[in-house]
Length: 336
Image 1 (tube, rainbow, N blue to C red):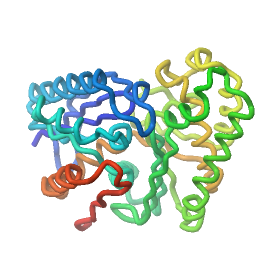
Image 2 (image 1 turned 120 degrees about the vertical axis):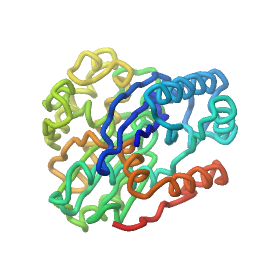
Image 3 (image 1 turned 90 degrees about the vertical axis):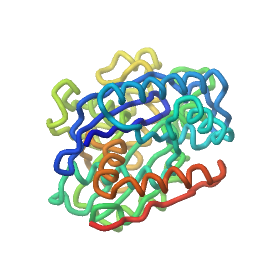
């Protein structure tokens, strides 16, 4: 069985085509299209018409690519940048009508569940009680669990792009020390209860996913991506603390020259590093493993393990939910 997934994020549209062999999604083709939606949409604002056109074109091309590689219609989802837009339903209908792709939005808590599943399968059962951290463009997902799916999930408005827009878009580059302190205060306040829960649970293993954590790991000395996914990559809290100080003293253009920091993400790298360091400090995590499997693999795994019915329910409730609904659904575990 060959299946595909399309992930509409804050920066890119990504496609994964995979073969499902013995319950494992084995990728045969990946592709991405740069949209940078987060640069065209203010938090809570509508997605403008030109950005919708770009999104339609990217989804159409991704679907056509999946078809060329022998996969059925893709499992297509959009994360917080679309989920939080007041014209979300209009955007979803436009994509569906013009591409025949049923794009849906995933609540942050469901994103955390699926990302946790991907990380659990990658890390294996020997990792024991597992904590997950994922920094996106608009939100931070945190999860903890002992089994296949998490026992606890949280989605907080602490994405690297969102915080950069809120605190660092005043024209001062690098930002002032007061701007940095203000961002840190907000992150600490938002994380207080979630961090207390993770400390209480006492995870045996902690993993971090997302492009933000991958780039921070590389900045702090982890192996480059060209070494492949099976090289173990660790991110230590003390190294990240030093990286925060380094990034805070540089302009976005200078950050883009650092190892691991790409030009499109240079502006938000400081906010991402501050969120990463703060959540590790407040949860008591001294290091995290950078995990290559995340939400896309989680979607593929749920489809393989539970069949298409669960995705049909996601799509149905995504259509019914009002844009302002913070948590329109929670996908229950079906066993295992």
